[in-house]
Length: 548
Image (cartoon, rainbow, N blue to C red; front, side, top):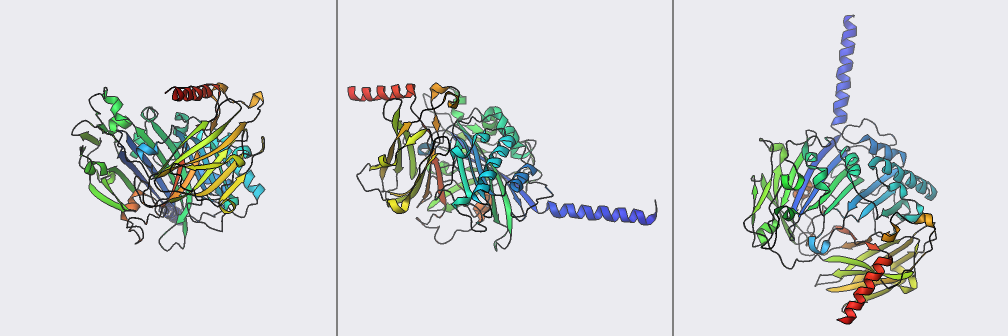
């Protein structure tokens, strides 16, 4: 080979290496784990894996994938997707006992998407159907059962969580849920493959399917949105969050709880494994443990090994104490963080959050009934404004004229029907019923929303498996602006990670008692239409009450 040919090849290798380095530095990845002992003896774990890609979200052709999963990027391009939020959840989050989670998710499968505004309404419907079918294949789930017959365009409840580029409105949004979806390892496996280190290193090592599906509550989620690249926000980036929520019950592992609850826990007892390394692709790899209850309660617990540092985060008049373990600074592996209580745990009344709700089916018989939602406002000082969303399947025919509001203290529920009520009736086998309300909950009271329904006549092929179990209806969605941050664990929208949340200075309006600026979206409750078995139970309860 000639000398100048060798020089040309060497120069080409150097140039290609430089290009590879440039594209590698345009992406960043962080992995975080928040652990919060709950007053009931349960332990709440929230895994969050965040990938930021410094690329224009409106780029028509995304190339040179490094940390960002290619399968997600192809879905973005194919379906003109601006934002995507989906979750696969088993069980029900009990807000009245556990407070608020970092990310809210209703039971079953949920998906919410925002498309680019240059698409027409018919093009958005086509892109939506293609999107849910792509997600069904990606996560091995039943998103392909989402059709226009169970899809709505939310008006006020959902708003873009990222940058609203190009004037997106409600006509560019779609929302649907599948409350009967069962979450299993076949969903967890493709979800873990989207992580840069998968489950080979880092916090992904703790994602043990056996322990995960033995928990009281678990939820897989994916959130995609455009964000500001820096503080000036002159350029934009793509942010992908993969999160997993678990509520474990370590007390079950310790046998009899008659003389108190042994609530000791560790990585090994909750996740079934030690942590052997951090992810080498992660710039931030940290574990946060909420030790606020350790400082305020009479029963204390001790962490081993000692944390790297302790932070105090104040927001909305509430202070949270966090113990930090920086995995990138760990010198001795493996590690097994343990919490040992000084004595057995006992608890009585759990302080409720500001807002929580319960839902059930009333009435009698198998042909008709009523849907009842009770929303508790536990804030003594003032009323709270909320937005209430109902998505009711077409085969559950609801009647708007039967919609009633009652308050436990006979206080008026503030609602202006022409301005704050939207109802789109459903059509058989074509579209669902859609109700949205903007109302004011009186302080320190319970507001009850009730309306009647009648079951539609179904063909025998339209019944789900195990028809005697009945039909599941999706959760109601409640959006509220909370005056204080009591029992709130979430991350503000203007930051991406817990690490950024700890270092961001609060504005003057957010530091006092009533300047809490983050919007809370609560997906509360699960309701089932009344099959024969459930109707008999309701009638027996009524008879027992009359007898008493």
